[in-house]
Image (cartoon, rainbow, N blue to C red; front, top):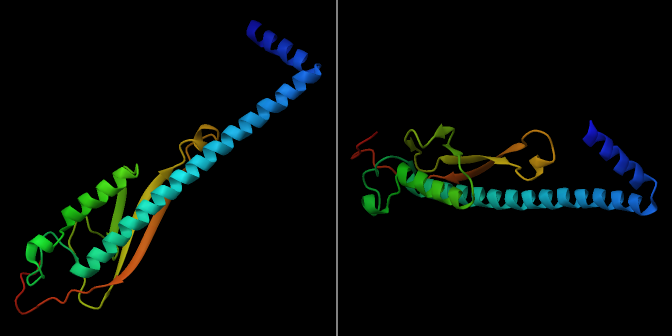
Length: 174
């Protein structure tokens, strides 16, 4: 109660003093400026993470199209053999490294609505491939001024066409 009385006394003195009202205005303006700086910083981080998400998804779509999918082993007859083929573990590690460089800790990926991190995905020659990567972005600085946590899901989709012709006469299958 004693502390509350001192605050009321200080506010009363500031209100009845002309330079005190200017101090209040400057404090409010400074507070608004801090919120603006935090919002702009969060938007810059959001843009950087969305750029990393799009670049990673372009890599996934391009690689998936060239390989005709993503599997845990190279298909028979793949040009360059296993040295040129990027299996699903290798692609997952590359994407995880790209995302960690951008400050993204968790992500999800799908190829034709199949989670390629858990199962093989094969798309025959000439058929469309739809890749989708998603992350959850938290507005960390702006959340300090607005109650609650502000999260946003960022999704990137790419469409490509499978370029690998599978030899069904001499194939190991899945």
